[in-house]
Amino acid sequence: MDQPHIAPGDILREELRRESRLGLLARPFMEKGELVPDKIVLEVMEKRLRKPDSKEGFILDGFPRTLVQAQMLDQMLAGLNRKIDLVLKFEISDQTAVRRLAGRRTCSVCGAIYNLHGKPPRKKDICDICGGKLFQRPDDKEEVIYHRLRVYRQTTQPIEEYYGCQRKLASVNAESNRREVLSQVLHAIQAL
Ligand code: AMP
Image (cartoon, rainbow, N blue to C red; front, side, top):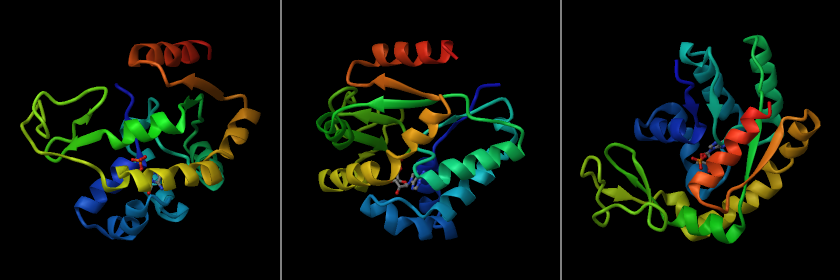
């Protein structure tokens, strides 16, 4: 079985699209580039990690983002007889982060992701795969990206120490191209 890629950002955006209770609770935080409160994110993740497709392992993306989330994740996984094997930190300059995020475009129909700099669509604002219209996420506007970087430094960066102490943290230089980044990721996995 393929290991699922689980990103609370994706799950929350889907909840928002369906205008569910969780989506409506999360919306004001997401639009401003703030973290959604731990209680909401943990509820979403607990439900997701209990699904049978996570039994053989999973890749978490954008979670945990606070120390409380990291601690609760360990507890949650202990209850499921599982553990985190590896934490990857993708390192880029603020300048690269802003350029990449501000250039991201998503298909409103199939969800495919493009980048105006690295992977542009063949036709402006149109999805190569399904012909759907591309849009920019509201939190990928430049001023919101700067706020997200500040939130990252204040709230997310401290969890590096948490995983560093557990000897689970590996750094990846993500400034380079996709092939080189992938090679570093595979190297970190093989070193386990
Ligand atoms: P992302 O798709 O990972 O960039 O996340 C988009 C937005 O969803 C973030 O800016 C937060 O508002 C929210 N979000 C995603 N993951 C988390 C998390 N682990 N903790 C709190 N909020 C989150």
